[in-house]
Image (cartoon, rainbow, N blue to C red; front, side, top):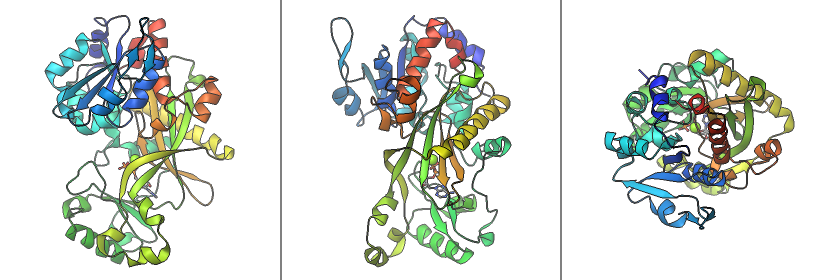
Amino acid sequence: MVLPRAEVQEILTGYPRQPIIGAIGSHSALDIADGAVEEGFHTLVLAQKGRDQTYRRYYRAHRDAEGRVTRGAVDEVWTFPKFADAAAPEAQARLREHGVLIVPNRALSSYVSLDLLENSFRVPMVGSRNLLRIEERTERENYYALLAQAGIPAPTRIPTPQEIEGLVMVKLPHATRRLERGFFTAASFEEFQRKSETLITAGTITPDDLSGARIEQYVLGPVFNFNFFFSPLVPREDGLELLGVDERRESSLDGLVRLPAAQQLEIRGSHAIPRYTVVGHGALTVRESLLEEVFDFGERFVEVTRSRAAPGILGPFTLQTCIDHDGKAWVFDVAARIGGGTNIHLALGHPYGNALWRTPMSSGRRIAIEVRRALAENRLREIIT
Ligand SMILES: Nc1ncnc2c1ncn2[C@@H]1O[C@H](COP(=O)(O)OP(=O)(O)O)[C@@H](O)[C@H]1O
Ligand SMILES: [Mg+2]
């Protein structure tokens, strides 16, 4: 059971007039903090020991006598032995005392259990608490179910490895680093067997995960991650915004494609099978003729979440797509929270967001504007869960 929204809204009544914007210190925390200070908020990063210097030292906010930020973006850092400790009852109480609004990022939903976030994390989240779980491929009501209900094209699922015909992507977690991927491609059952054996022997994947793996059609084409924002504070027709588009750099995939063919062919064993560990992002734009379709996907996603998982998507979300040779976009993954690649428009803003807002508009800044607007209109309850 997800915490009743009314219970979380009730917490807001004890909050100060100017809440603090907080996030787990990883993923897109810099974008969140940068946008928040830009809009006049104080910021908090919940860091893990050994991963705190980025925020505590290198991006610490310096403020002048009037409180204006002159350098950096992070006012306060609370360091915990483990990220998960940031959600312990004592930490929750401290977050409430300080009037912190948490912006959920992937680090939050990866390092803190979803059960805890849904059922007992009594701190207001700017975003959709009940949608964090849809990213889990093993869940029944996952994003594939929502995409199907919304009529948004997703790569076709291949029910069993025996039915593989043509290139497929096999999606399963890494054997030991559970937050990383043990993905591989195959074009036949024989290749599936051969590669999976290599990866099992190398300790990259386990037979157990393999039996539950998602096998789907491989979409041959570039990846575009569309970073959207949905606001419930404005008339519905103005609610959906496209802020930016990013792509990922993945290791070892990007390393392999930078090698000449002759060298690629020299690589043997599991190293020849690309890994899809995200290590960075780049900014993109898309052909303008694609925008219409992509906005339609965004609208459909907003609607399906509003009807199937009230209150639906609030704030940022990302549709991760591959564009095929017919120029058709396929959504292979969804993030119902701030995306992992939004640091590309940190401070600078992004072409699409800037064009809409007539000022540099990053995802982080857009979130902070939403909070500022909600505060001004006394509607904070409407953007939190
Ligand atoms: N159906 C697909 N066709 C082609 N490439 C894909 C497909 N699904 C995923 N990928 C590639 O794998 C990467 C990770 O996939 P994704 O589904 O986003 O995994 P995760 O949920 O771990 O982020 C993508 O960035 C993309 O490069
Ligand atoms: Mg993804």
